[in-house]
Amino acid sequence: MPDYNLRIIIPEIFLFCWAIVVILSDLGSKRKSPQTIGYLTMAGIAVTGVLLYFFRGGISFNNMFQSDTLAVFFKVIFLGSAFMAVGSSFGITNERIKNHRGEYYGLILFSTVGMMFLSSSSELISLYIGLELTTIPLFVLAAFYKDDKLSVEAGLKYFVVGAFSSAILLYGLSLLYGLTATTDILTMKINLALLFLKFGKIGPGFILAMVMIIAGIGFKLALVPFHMWAPDVYQGAPTPITAFLSVGSKAAGLVALLRIFVNGLWSFASDVMQPLDWGIIIAVLASAAMILGNIAALRQTNIKRMLAFSSIAQIGYVMVGVVAADEMGVTSAGFYMFIYLFANMGAFAVATVFGDQTGSDNIISYAGLSQSSPLFAAGMAVFMLSLAGIPPMGGFAAKYMVFAAGIQAGYTWLVILGLLTAVVSLYYYANIIKTMYFAPGESTIRINPSFPAKLVLLLGVVGVIIFGIFPGPVLEFARETAGVFGF
Image (cartoon, rainbow, N blue to C red; front, side):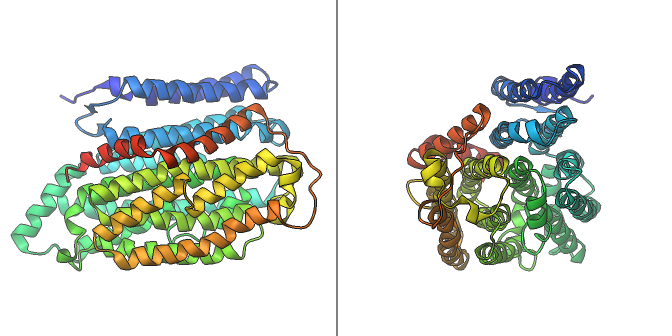
């Protein structure tokens, strides 16, 4: 009989039900309480975090659902990104989204539920369903400004590319199932090892499956050359949704990659297994992401497009930890995403508030911001310095960890490339700071964020600085996630 251990699935069930409560509450109030609906959503996310603490550990549904340390770690990132995205949304729900606020917040929660299921999936079908539950609400959210051509274009592009990538991923997973006769990732790993021991090779079918799965997940991560959708979608979508895409969606893609490749296909990560070496494939994609993302970001005048190309480069740095495929690699990749949560969500929160109150997303519009809103400008400077990897910000510790993991695993060439492209990134991150503090022109608009936006900015600044100076607790938590793979 199946083992239905529903205790460990309580956080997901609660958040799913809470999303329905949020939508019905907005309808019940005749859509006249935008602040109340926003606070209700944030409260639901916070309660889910508490439930996650009390109902963690264990397996359910015959090992299909695992509430292990890896799942809990990434669920913290998902809930944190959702909380900060909702906190950044109070301005747009007051001004631009007046008729469907409940649906807007509810879809964010539904997507978060999908991410949480995905992180706990130890079986290919449930993992794929979790990925779809994550992305389908995001298609709608990207096009939520129905009267804005850029937003509608963003939603349409994201839908077409997302559907295409899902089809490629599903085909790759089906090939993997055909080779191993199982969808359970642990059993799949054992069967692949037995096949290789028996025949000495697995054949082109396995290589095709591996390439298609990398391509499918690569679209979700916006890895080069699967990145073409990201700049337009990031620019056209509502800015809080862009932030949620850049952190929550990428973290979901990362945990899917870790579950399938570092766990299920770990034995095919080393040079000994060439050409069945997925490590070198991802290393090449990571190098392309770091090069193209940083060079393209140099030419951007729109801050959302600049951060879009920046996020492409940032996921390239994360992949340095993934290709290491060892304890230090998994630890560094998880730690990087945790720090990236605070830095990138904070940067997009600044862009959201600034865009709400000035109507501009152009970088030049930030000129003189340090005089009119010094604390606001200082917060943005902290986020830019962290993304650039300047000590003592958290981004420095994150980059140090992934580069150390890459060198330890023998990917010295990839680390050297990462260091060189990190130097390039200094230019466009520093350009934001230069524009705010030294560019000619005086901004006369005093930015006054709402209380939830101030809370988001405060969380971002404190997280970047505190975990940059004292990374120990998060590093230890991330190291425990690597224990799931049994290195």
